[in-house]
Image 1 (tube, rainbow, N blue to C red):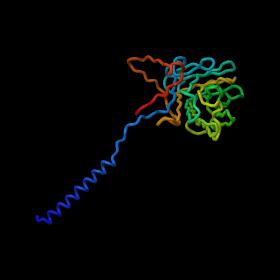
Image 2: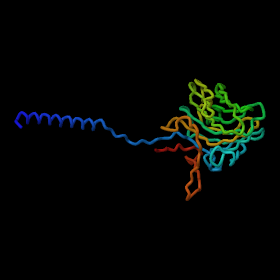
Image 3: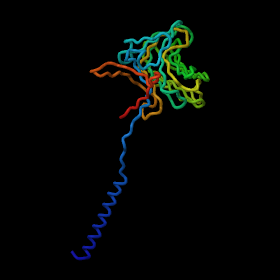
Image 4: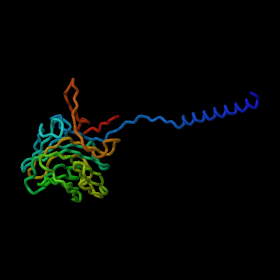
Length: 279
């Protein structure tokens, strides 16, 4: 090989080295490392009544005469809640939120089974969204024929279901509340189908949202309902931050120790704790 060929080979070799170095450099500068993230569930509350106890568990309080936990019928698991309402009985359970809310969205899911309709002409309460001062933000009521009515208390706007709940049938009921004094929204779903929505409204009749009630604390009719597999979400997390959708609630207990104990957090009250979930 002469000097000219030698120089040419060196030039080619240098170019190859430069190209290889450039490729390696591009690989280095364009490859990034993705750090693991903590996935935060927006699930505020879950209950399938599987602890078989209303006084020392996840529930914040009772309405009137204590409702009872039954083993049949159930939507899933071993237990459900039975609420029986009459002219002399008010029954239900209450769940407080971790803090009083004035913004964001809340999503409620419950499974309801109607054992008997209201025997008078008034609508009977199924759920109430209530403020810390005791004023109602919204009501979910049922007529004597099984039709649901979701009412925004501040302006009496109402979504009336196109579906009437048949007796002895489980239905998935969901309510969405966008919290606002001016651009709020309320929406009702039955088995995943929207029954209508109210928009551009004040959904904070009582200034904030503080608790959910299951049962009846106001009316004077007669009806019997079962509740099961309840879930409450907000929209703050990276998952479970919208409609809960279909689901069953199970209480998992270790085989070596099946004792269950609940402690208020903070210790001075019975508010829920928003636990972080990871995946």
